[in-house]
Length: 203
Image (cartoon, rainbow, N blue to C red):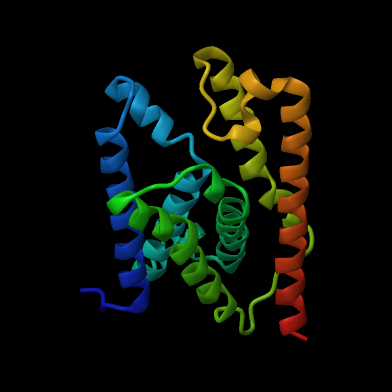
């Protein structure tokens, strides 16, 4: 039996928060269940928190199969980039456009503040003798770029966009294209900072 480690508790905390958000979303849905479920998985916040939960779970289990991809330091570092962007964008832009209350507010803080801080601290203290090549930067951008393409294509057919800065219905394609480019650039900058920190720490 696997020992109960900090990774185990972090995984439990992450999965519990994600499940709680799923239940809250279904309870407050304004559409049918199937569409509500699809919308749940169109949020970058949800997908990235799921990635965090998977990474913590893999780190606890230490598998010897393909699941071990999630225990690689390169994967942990790229996940740190993604969850940082989740926290940064929410707390500097999105936090001010809605006011959750009750349990929703608690879960909201967990997804956008507590889990990002916990994971970034975990990543930072995991650097030690690990290193990353600069070329990893290009691979790290694939996830946010594919995400943007998918939600824009889906939004075109169902007229729903998970975030206001990619809402083509209100902003138009030109403005959304600019916002998407800026977001990709931001991901690139944070990726370079993370890689730079790792390489500096290992000198």
